[in-house]
Length: 249
Ligand code: PGA
Image 1 (tube, rainbow, N blue to C red):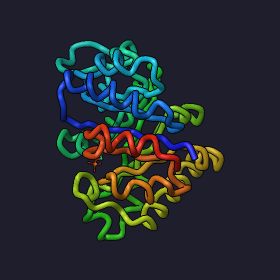
Image 2: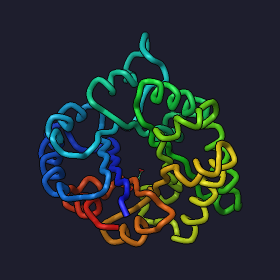
Image 3: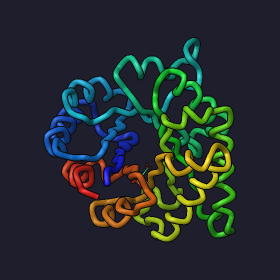
Image 4: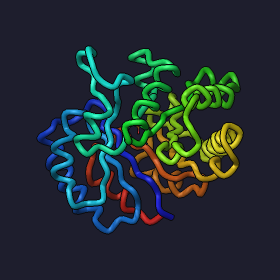
């Protein structure tokens, strides 16, 4: 089954390293049937574009402004990304929500701006440990979805990938249990079904993220309910990421 394999470099590596990485990844995954999306820092995007050219690997950014243009020093707009050949953008990553105080409303505005500019969105949602322990994970994730997708039309969902990333699993070496991933993915599809239609719930792409590595990737990404994975730390090693990206699931 064809899967979507996404890397999230976070704030790691340099543009010079991106050149070597891109060339190696393109070579090592040239036979892959999966859809591969690489999300390096903004500064690496041009280099990545140049050295991924001719491969089927898509480029994603890790953030985008909710504003289209103007007096927003330090921000990067959707049209700037689009112009560079970027196709995807990660929105609502838990690190942006917690460290940069991004709210559900801001996440919603960013999605609208990105989609209207022709970018596709990787929308991150997921609960923290206290919420899970309080048995509120389902309600929490549902609300994140509802708020993020407010005002988004059903036909725009084609441009949305939902990344379920339990916060307590990100960068901790602890992945969620397979049965908990399955339960949450089912809930996400049901909620999309409720908000839009059953068909959209079935068709929306849902990926899992949180401590996927070279040892555990197969059993998680192979889950039939999942369309793929978002990989942070383990994507920094091009050999490991290429193995995960070219796997036949
Ligand atoms: P991780 O990060 O794979 O290092 O846990 C995933 C993410 O934050 O997207």
